[in-house]
Image (cartoon, rainbow, N blue to C red; front, side):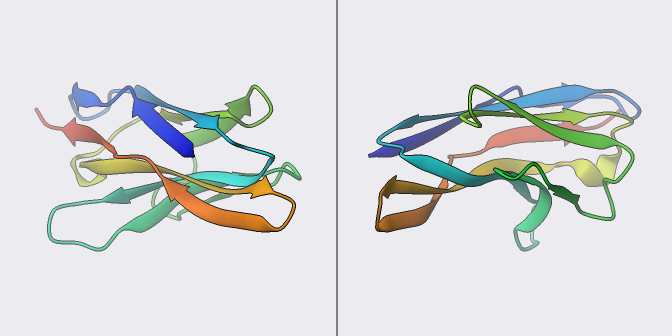
Length: 120
């Protein structure tokens, strides 16, 4: 069993900052990638940022230059530093991990999400 737990959401004013944290635990053999996605009301879930075991990172165009993804603890912890937040960043943010639980078994796992609200 694998569990992803997000924390750090909240309400801030436009221009403010937040840092989200995701911790993966359970029967994890190897993490291929960790990432953050978000879903705003009435919209589809979209990729925000990802980081891979090889060290590459990728960002949505809308957050480049404002958000930074980083990791620790052998990729079992991933952070999303969000600066210069805008009202359009308001969404539920979900942590995602693609990982192996054994040599031949892998899958995508999701956290339950943390709400980020940007409002004055």
